[in-house]
Image 1 (tube, one colour):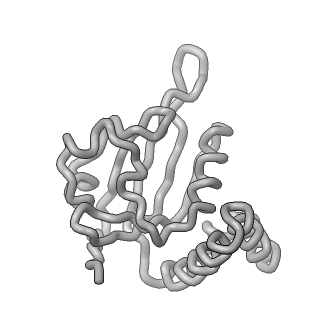
Image 2: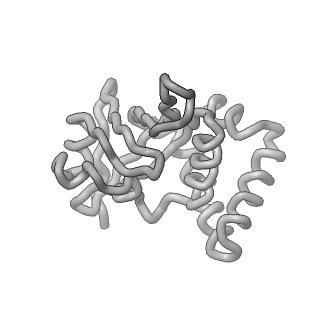
Length: 162
């Protein structure tokens, strides 16, 4: 069984990537909790820390937002080098060129996710994973959209309501 690495209150994990998701910067807190060295993170795809319990639907939505020049908020379960995991509340934004306004990378800051919010998110993620196992990302998106419709909220409204 994997071990949960809890982030202390007030700790922010920060990383930057290029437009393909390759890590170009990792702050000391991210390096520490991930268990990787800076050299092991830089130049690697950010999904190096993706936990298999994370629905692909969430990352598909994240990339759609970012590539449209929009920010993304969401809960993410990451995997550390030792096989453990840590939950974060992530805020990911595009980085724009000052020359022409094009997207040149992405910036992510993540803070500890609270147990009360995870108690709501984890069963939803299980539902998305089950849907994905049956019909891929399309089925995961359909399951998420059904949930949001039942709540009468957009994804952003739901996340911010937690």
